[in-house]
Amino acid sequence: MKRLKSLSKRPKDLLGKNAEELKRLLEIEENNAERIARLLDRGGAIAIKLERLESQGIHVLTRADPDYPTRYKERLKEKSPVILFYAGEKALLGQPGIAVVGSRNLDNVGEKCAEFVGNVCGVSGLVLYSGGAKGVDTISMKASLDVQGHAVGILAN
Image (cartoon, rainbow, N blue to C red; front, side):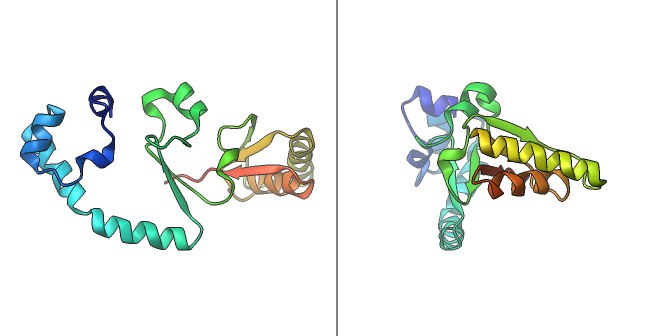
């Protein structure tokens, strides 16, 4: 990605290039150029899959997109995810909030605490970020949404 930026190019500019052209353009080893060329050749199949996801309300953002959350780039730099899949309001990504993760198995006190944190987050206007797992995650997310707050579930893989 750094090399593309230095050339004022975007990932789409690699489409249609063969391994030799990629090797020269990106100044990479032949085996890497061949691998990238093979991956780029799968573009048609990927486009079909992306259209299917789009029809199901699942959208894609890449680090090259202008709407990609700037906070992710600023804080994570090169470690920020290359691709984000999302459903719902993308403007919530990277907004100020509180991350909540916790146990899947809770007693009554733990459930009430998770609800309280979710309620406070929702009422205060902070986005509640969570992994969406059973237990603390889902209880706090639901509590935030119940008071007209916002919740973002960040799922691995």
